Image 1 (cartoon, rainbow, N blue to C red):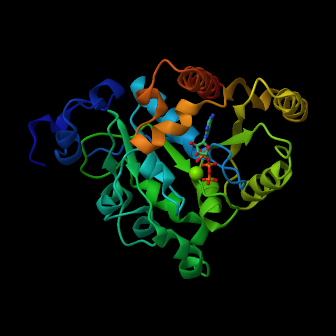
Image 2 (cartoon, rainbow, N blue to C red):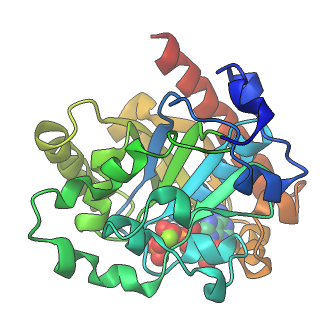
Length: 300
Ligand SMILES: Nc1ncnc2c1ncn2[C@@H]1O[C@H](COP(=O)(O)OP(=O)(O)OP(=O)(O)O)[C@@H](O)[C@H]1O
Ligand SMILES: [Mg+2]
């Protein structure tokens, strides 16, 4: 250790990095004691285009804004979370593929985003080869879980309090890794006719992971996305999903909003791109609800 602050007490306040000095946060180690593991939430649905990545980016932004140190793990070879947070493909020299194949520790893949206290472990198309390469290894389902064990250990400048895993649209080994590593799962469901189709398959997979790989896994909640108030079908879907899944469905419904779909092309979360739009307001409400549920889970 080279730093005089190395004996900083192990409290959340002392952990809070100076948000104005990202380089210092990343490169000046001040801590060596192991810290509590972060909360790990996997954002999963095998259906494509339902709002997983949008939810990961904006929930991550909202959690960072209230003082959490958030890491988004991009586990989708499409790399949309990385692109949506403005990470150029040329800067993804170390990716989640390198982490899952054991070539590098998670910390080595972490990049600072434009949002203070929000970080990302980016992905590349290499991830498409993961299943083929690792699918026969005994620890194949625990690669992410094992990589996260070392996240808040060793010489480092700060600790993560939340990890959000952005899953690919598939129930493949990548998603199973996310579920095996997670405390809880967040499921975005698009307000469309086939919304519930596939949900039972997803819930079955969660049950299987729970019995075989991760006994404490739970469903955090279901978020309805892309709600269109001019469309009767949307409200019918909301009613059906609430009837089927009861209190697991968050009160907040995310509306279809053009600002949400524009933001990724600027490499920004919608909460940064246009804080006042209805999409941002909805994601802030959702984050508040999720944080409230987190508090209840911690207390109970
Ligand atoms: N509430 C919304 N209003 C308008 N557009 C939205 C909304 N949510 C997401 N989108 C847009 O819909 C598309 C799909 O969203 P997103 O990428 O978040 O879904 P996904 O589930 O991660 O998709 P994939 O399964 O391909 O990873 C994106 O172009 C996104 O910008
Ligand atoms: Mg996605």
